[in-house]
Image 1 (cartoon, rainbow, N blue to C red):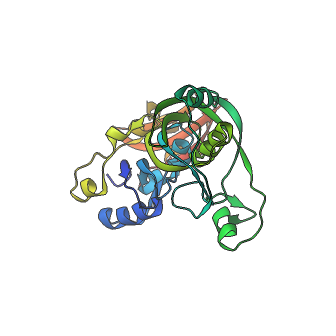
Image 2 (tube, rainbow, N blue to C red):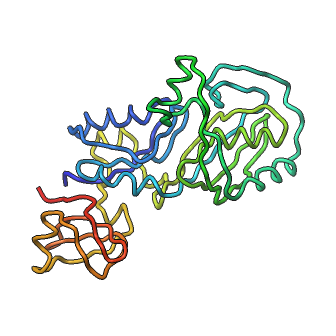
Image 3 (spheres, rainbow, N blue to C red):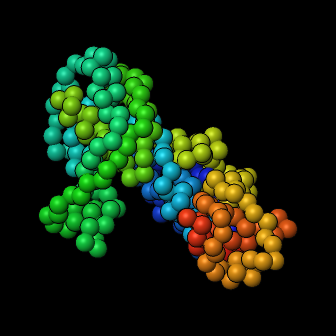
Length: 281
């Protein structure tokens, strides 16, 4: 199978790009993409797509993500995480679990989130972290995000641990900054694990060492996305093989197959289907 998905358990201190570069060498192919950047500090689920499956990136990126995060109290950094330059310090005030739980529970729902300066978001053709590097002023954009669920886990040694389920585009560093503001304390993200993306859990993920040893599962489109499978018939076979627009009484993602072979993935809206990816050679 030259086109497939693979669930990587990204290690700490690797960038997502580092993971792709290593996969390029391990799998001997240049055509690999991932479906959601993880900071070097972070670890956990990174869905990677190989070959023509790279055209599925936007569909998987739109799925919800689950994280377990830690907040170290008493410092503030320019990056909003433990790896940045400390710009303010204070002795953490004593908090009660009840105070923390009330604030964390209050974060559930939809709100406008300011995107952190140290991020890969493009503004006027330039990534935000490049503005920071060049010491240029820039107005930070905002995203509408949804905190679908959030749960307090523990509070010990001036560190708060919580779990959250969030929409695409949510920055956990920014979420933590908001939590600290509401608690009236200084704090930064000190650890982050993506435990789930869409239907893929960290227990489904493989380390780079596993993949090097060929100890991993290759995922097909039916594993990766919720699709309806239709066996090609002669009436539309030529159109599908050519990636032409289709008009049929269908809706959503449709995977056309012939004799169990993936031929093309289409997206249908109001009966009109446009090809996402052709999988024939």
